[in-house]
Image (cartoon, rainbow, N blue to C red; front, side, top):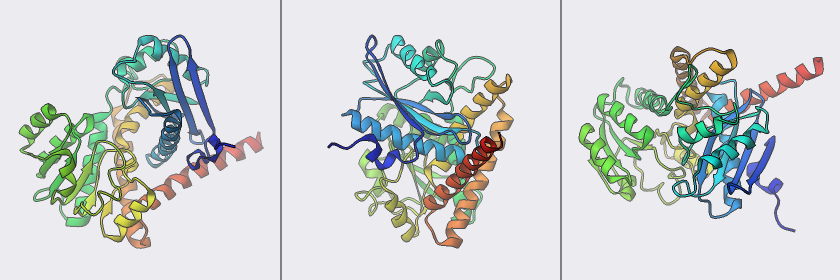
Amino acid sequence: MGKTLFDSPSFVNHEGVHAVFDEKTGLRAIIAVHSTARGPAVGGTRMWNYASSAEALEDVLRLSRGMSYKNAVADLEMGGGKSVIIGDSRTQKTPELFRAFGRAVDTLGGIYYAAEDVGVSVADIAEARKVTPYVLGLNDGPEASGDPSPVTAEGVFRSTLTVARRLWKQDDLTGLTVALQGIGHVGGYLADKLHAAGARLVMTDVNTALLSEVAARTNAEIVAPDAIYDVKADIYAPCALGATLNPETLDRITAKAVVGAANNQLATPDIGQRLFERGVLYAPDYVVNGGGIINVASELLARQTGGAYDPQWVEGKLSRLMETLEEILERSATEKRPTHEIADAIAEARINAARDQKAEQRKAA
């Protein structure tokens, strides 16, 4: 008998996984709801040309669990979920496809809210919004939070300063070299902030035109994509694809710290252990890049209360997230455990506490 969904280690503790098909538009999508213990599951929608449906399933399961942890660590009243649409975002997108996706999300009745992710734009989500209220990341209306990238970049920047204070006892980045991998949505904003704080930048991206433009205004040195791992830098900032910390790159990276915006930076958890053993300070990715989801959470809150997007609320949550990062780094040092394990433990404790509280309330009712 072949393997089933339940055999995947990534399935563990998921509340539900929904496979969606729409013959008319060709929509093939998977919506994974990991946890609703802290509130409705919230997470982006990724459109990607997966090699197989098994690969799409594995991706959505990992990402939705990651969202539960990210939302809990950012102290948001949201659970974690994710959706993937199987297809080429450059050639297979239609307004009808995203309306079909919106109808699928709507059938879940609000346990999952979708937002943008790789291959999906604000305009795509706006199409889905025509048929369901359960989408976030809109550009218009009083509750609209718009592009989350600047807030994500601000969180990564503050995390970098937190690490600099810890390792080099300085309040800015003067004299420090940052190897910046990827200057897309978040990386470009981050480059400007790092440069303004005195960092020397070495950067790479596959988009050479954009790379030249950002490098020119930040006095950065440009290297080929694969050469970024060999840069003599103090901080490595992965802001492109995930899993760039892997057995092939580990020995090439000489930085004392890793602080970046990319999701799932550790190819496997044991890479986090190996970084720790080498004395490399790894700032856990889903803590560092939590600014974007905080921004989206403000939109959900405004929707729930009939209010408007509140930048002060976002600022408060971002400050609280930085305090959590300080706690993770401090506990890692005193408990002599890798930072990613500490972050997971904090997230799990918050999720479990919410789950237990809900169970108690059900009993009382």
